[in-house]
Structure formats: C-alpha cells, structure tokens
Amino acid sequence: MSELLEPDQKKRPDEDRDWNETFRHAKSLIAVVLSLVVLVGGALFTYNKVGSAFTGLFLAEDYPGPGEEDVEVEIPQGSTLDEIGSILVDSDVIASTDAFREAATEIPNASQLQAGTYTLQTKMRARDALQSMLDAGVKGGKRFLIREGLRLNEQLVALADQTDIPLEAYEEAIKHPDAYGLPEWADGNAEGYLFPDTYEMAGDDPNAALKQMTANFKRKADDVQLEARAADLNRDPAELVTIASIIEAEVRRPEDRAKVARVIYNRLDSQPTMRLQMDSTVHYAVGHPRTGGVTTSDEDRKNPSPYNTYEHTGLPPGPIGAPGRSALEAAANPEDGDWKFFVSINMDTGETAFAETWAEHQVNVRKFQAWCQANPGKC
Image (cartoon, rainbow, N blue to C red):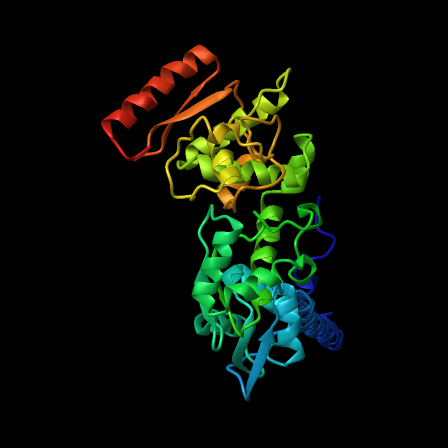
C-alpha cells in the first residue's frame, strides 16, 4: 500500500506536540510520587510508634535502677513470690509484681528466698532487687538445717540447738498447729509435716521456723501433686505422707524408693490384707533411737502400739518421721510391679532386693543375714 503523503509533506514527530500539556502531566506524576512517599513514610512512622506502644503492653513495668533511697522491707513467714512482689511494690522498691515474677523465672534459686528483714533501695530494677535479697540473706538471721527422716522430737531439738530458742518454747508452740499452718488433713499432728531443708529466720519466735517448714511442705506437696495422686491411688493425702515417712526410714537408695512404695501398696491392697511388718515402724513404736540398728527383737515386735505394723494391719496412725521430696514422690508415684517383699542386703551401700513370693524373699533374707555375719555391729 502506497503512502498517503508525498515524502516532502510528512510531519516531524514533535511538530504537533503541546509542551504545556506535557509539563502539566509531569507535575501531576511528581505530585503523586511525593504523596506516596509521604504516605509510606507516615505509615512507617505510625507503625513504629504503634508497634512500640503495642509491644509495651506486654512488657512488665520495671524501674531502670539502680535505686535511690535505702528502705527496710519485712517479708513475713510463708510468703509466696507474688506476695513478696506485692510487698516490694508497696515499699516502692520495684515497679510491678509482673516484673518481679519475670525476674524469678530467670533466677534459678529464686525459690530459696527466705522470710526476714532486708535492706534494699527504692526504685530498683526487679531483677536487681531479687538478686540483692538472695545475696544478702536475712538481716540478723539464723540459718538452720533439718535433715530428712528426723522424728518430730528430734526436729525440735535440732531447731532449739541451731536457733538459740529454748526447746520448751518449741514444745509449747508445736501444740498450736493453727499458729504455724499445718495442712487440714494432718489432723493437728505435726509429725512428718515439718519439711526437712535449710532455712533462715530472724527473731526469737519459734513459730517463725515452724511456719517456714510447714509452708515448704505444702509447696513440695503441690510439686508432686500429692492430693491428686492420693485420689488416683484411692488414698487420702495423709496416708501418702505416712507411706513416704516409712520409705524415708527404710530405703537409702533413691532408685529403690518407688519400688518399696509399690511393696507397701501391694500389701495394703492384698486380700486378705497383709501386715506391712516394717521394722522402722516398730522402732518408732518402742522409741528406739533412729540411729540404732535396723533389726528388731521378738519382744519389740509384740509391742501393742498402733504404730507396730507387725501387730496391726494397715498403715500406722500417722507418719514416723519427716520424709524428703524423693520419698514423697515415691509414695505418690509407685513403680509398677508385683513385689510384696524387700530387704536390704548391704547396709553400707543400701542395696535392696525385691521379691514377689515368700520363697524368693527367703533367699534374699539369707543374703542379708550373711552380710550381717560378715559385718558385725552394722545390723
């Protein structure tokens, strides 16, 4: 097809262009670009501001520290971490209980915080306040250690010796369980419920020590879910504490404790019910020293005390000493098995042999007797 115009009649490309119109479009484009920049920049600025504010909603309020004025803070016996945090907030030591709770999750030994009087500062960082309390200990405090397995009378003697509070004061205080917070299911009997541990206290009130020990027992019972496990085992919590006290007295090696717990449950649940026949309960019944030998005499085993499990079926009426956490865990979580007998066959190592039948048990008893003959005075 031929062109419509002769070559000399063709227009140049820019002949009919309207440059004013071009500039107008360019200006509009620039305005749009600038608007987008402003919008994007504003959005980013707003995002940062809103994001910071939103994040701040989830950050616990805390002072920057390091602190301002000295202040003395009194932490009562049995206070929980949340209660301690509230006391510190009221004294303006820290800004919030949430910050204190977060600090407690970051410091492994936070649960070792003791009751007493502490010198701190106002407006401290929560973590610094908690660490300062752990480092300083209790102002004017007395540290005492109560070992596992002690009977109540032995615990009171140890408390009197280590806190310089007369034994008579503890013997009077122990008669008033409401003053130091025994669990309801202890039925007013403190035997087994003063938890063995290391403590620190201030002052000369015997209840200050007793409150710490019962509060610690409650924490440990919660840790091992004692009440829930008792229900699972068709027992009440007090029975599990009694079982734990027997385990504490009978077993040395941690790996044997849940198996001994199973022996006890198997005997209690057998038909007809087997007597537990635990020498540890006989020692308690007749008042033998806890550090004496492990065996009992025929005369001992005829003692009419309800704590004598050779004479009476079922559990004794209460604990025979203070179980530690390992024994409580074993009582709450017995190992699966059909054992009904056990005997320690090495008093030095605590090695224990288990059996399902009387015949198997007699083989293990002979091992025990042989060890005792080879090691006079240790049984």
